[in-house]
Length: 197
Image (cartoon, rainbow, N blue to C red; front, side, top):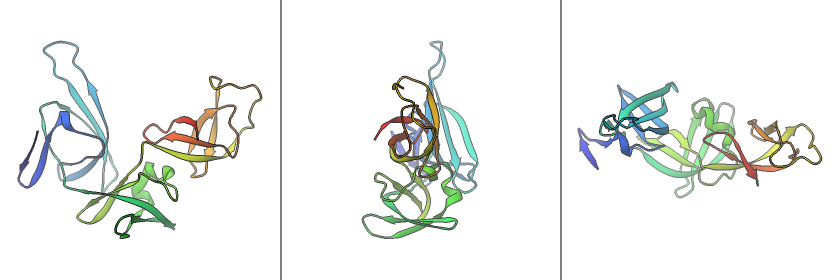
């Protein structure tokens, strides 16, 4: 159930989802994760732990809510975009429908930056008052290994792992049988290796 109060759309905590922008004490917080903690006793309340970051300051945010707590959400626009280019300290994205361009600093992208490549599909811009404030990544991306220890002959998928540097600079643990030049799928939420691409 959603309702409008003071021109702001409010939702209950049990409806909160990743990618929502909420208003908390004059901050705009982008929710990056919601976890549910079920009460151990019958009389206990289920808690919804929201994690995210302040859009302006990039400070981490973490707060727990009861399922029926009301939360102010901030109106934002979600548009499909592609990375056009990186220019020094900024990234320029283009709306794939209108070809409108948006610029955001690399620092503002923070943890999302190592997952963003040219031609990445499933990337969305979050706009507040026509200003790009954050990007929403697809659940997984394909990246190429540019540096790692040599592959070990006879290593299996269940064997030990080794660190690998990917083409965006991201470092992930990969199975020992993978080598430089291999493309892999990486989970954008956990940063973990998923499979060969």
